[in-house]
Image 1 (cartoon, helix red, strand yellow):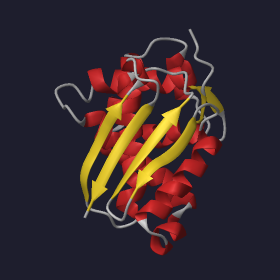
Image 2 (cartoon, rainbow, N blue to C red):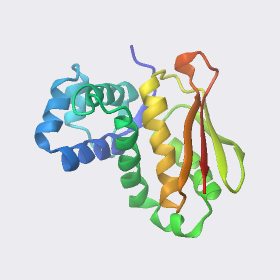
Image 3 (cartoon, helix red, strand yellow):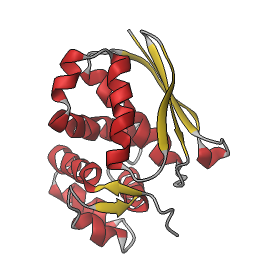
Length: 188
């Protein structure tokens, strides 16, 4: 059943491109073979500019975790960081040289609505060395998506802005009964 949340295809294509470049075409074929239809067909023909049900990337993440990521606890998190860096480097590269980490994350919250059609992303606490980001009203409840994918997605711009991350935690999740999803980052 669909949550109604849609994501921009660029997040999917960057993940696919990362898998292909790091693990090869045969690994991508293995991942796609492990996915259920119709997600497999949709993922295989994703356009960066299209909009797709978030469940399809959830199916992609699950297939990645059970195939090429099997036995690697932080696999999805690592892939998400690298795929997100590719996304942010395309359009926002100049911002990483100009702004503070808190400024960068405030821009990321603005970018959210250009990449996802549901949910409100806000910075709820920040200082020179930490930030807490909260997502409300997001209907897709999936621990891998929140704890791994989005945790990596928010970390990437902090690293691109020069931070050395000392903590990147997923502190609350709607898939575990919380009223929102939340992430906390500290850096030096």
